[in-house]
Structure formats: structure tokens, C-alpha cells
Image (cartoon, rainbow, N blue to C red; front, top):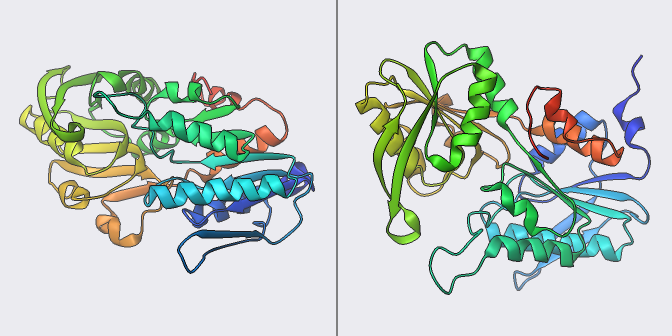
Length: 331
């Protein structure tokens, strides 16, 4: 008989849930065979956040699940205050599990006199007392280098790609929406054994919201595209990409993304007939009313996070998680 996972983590293990995605934290706890540790999070009358850890954590290894998705500022501040409370309660190590890392798109200056907010967030987490950070599919991998503490960068590629393996998409083609996603698209193509096409686009306007597609490299006529990206925010780019692919003779497209931000007019745009299905994960909660009667398929990232947490706690290789799935990914 195999050893229960709760015995593998030991008595010095604690798993906490922030308010941003408690359902994901509960899933992770169930897989690891542990109970979520007790914490009270509530607002003061002036809307400041109050944190009270309701059990002793002295000398323990803490893992707290809190994506910094919308409302980003509130969720980030809650995470920082929670880490500070844990540090002051004499936790041995504190690992912030941030499935969706907010402010990641602000990783460089696009014009003069702008902040590099992703670096600021990395500094804030370190100063608050985090010993380690774990995130999934950062907007750009170099954000990992913004941290002066260990940072485990995981990917949802295998979770998403295996869905398409089981679906057996006929005459498929992997589509990179821009040059920056070619490497990611190549990993999908290797796993699924499908050809690769690349779209070239130019951005303009405020925050680069105006997108113009100027070239498509690769054969999509009569094929079923699987468009990959890290996240969908307003859905404007994905909407235009699917239409451009349809005009090039492609079938309605699948869209595969890690993070369902889904703000603004995204849901309206995703109903367009040029989009067959959107496949994503639960790094950010997607309530039933946002799933477009099943057109948005949400896969659980909890098994991946559970395995990574267990390996970190047992001082084993996290990269091996992906090597076991025949994916070379530099965690």
C-alpha cells in the first residue's frame, strides 16, 4: 500500500488559502491529503485588510495560494499582509503560490517615465518575508530573474496540450499569435505532433490595444487552428486572430491559454463563430456564468501545483515534473 501524501508532507507542513481562489486551494489540499490551515481575513471598517492566523505556525513550512488577479491591488496587498503575519508568527519558510502573477505585463518600459511594476512586486514579496515564490506561465520568463529568492516558474502547457491529445483534433495546426509566443507554440507542436504557423502583428494606441495583423507564415487553409497564448484579458487580439485565420481559409479555431482574465468585452468577443472553443485553467476562478454554456472549458491546475509543492517540501527536483512528461522546461 502506498504511503498517504499527508504522511509524506509531515507535521511541519501548512497550506493556507487567500480569498482570490479558495476553490483551487481546497483542490490542492484534497490532493495532498491535508486540511487547509485556519486563517481569518476580513476588512476593517476603513477597508484596510485584517489578517489573523488562527493556529500556531512556529517553525513550520507555509504554502499560501493567492493569485493576484482582479482586483489585483486588493489581492496583492492581502498576500503581502498575510506573508508579514506569517513571518512575525515565526514560520520557518513561506512559499507564495501565485498561479496568476499580476503586473507581469509591466515587465519593461514601453514609453518614457513608466514603472517596471513586475520588478516592484518581486521586491515587495521579498521584503514582506516570502522565502520562495511559485507561479504559472509568466507573461515573459525573464520575470523569474526579478527575484532575489528562489522562484519556481511552472507551465500549464502539458495540462492544456494533453486535453487536445485526448480530443484528437483532426488536421490541426498550432498557431503562435506573435513572434514572442513561437517558443511556447513549439512546445505544443512537439507534444501534439502538429505543424506550426506564426502570425505577425503590430500594436498601437494606448496600452497597445490596437492590433493589426500584417502577415501569416504557415499553412492554415482547411486546417483547424489551435491558437496559444498566456492569457486572455479583453479578448480583442484573440477575436481578431480567429477572424484573420478564418479569412485565410481555416476552420473555426480552438484557443488555448493558461490564464482566463476575461475582463471588458472578452465574453462577447469569444462568442464569435470563428472561435470553436476556449480551453483554459483555473489559475483564476471562472464562474459558471462566464463559461458561455461550455464554450469555455476550464481544466484544473491543482494536480500540477500539488506535485510541485510536494517536491519543494521534500527538497526534490521540480523540473522533473516536466521531464517525466517529456517536456524540457527550465523551472
